[in-house]
Length: 124
Image 1 (cartoon, one colour):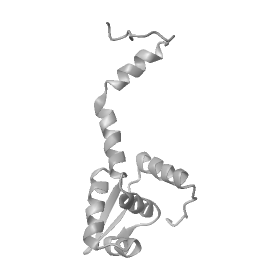
Image 2: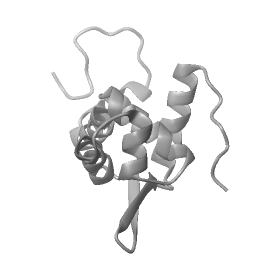
Image 3: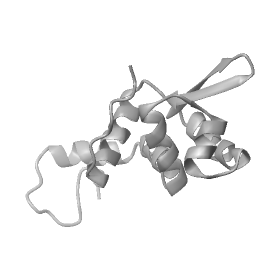
């Protein structure tokens, strides 16, 4: 069977071949899976959502989530490594916020829609 043929023909048009071609690009799908894996944890979703609205240090995030600082740092690391959040240092303090990327904006919108909430406008 050639790569353009399917076992059963159901009237697929030329777009079927394009879709199959995209399906073969496993690396792109892996990238998407990695991003969603970061948000597969409730705490990370909460941290991400918080950082969509304000820039905060670990101590403040810890207080807002009623968690220890090491636990918050444990969750911040993969979010930062995946490019969903960024950090900046001011003296000894490190502040975190969501990355200014289309990916972060789309994830924020998705969270807002799933939770059926309108997010507060805290950033200035």
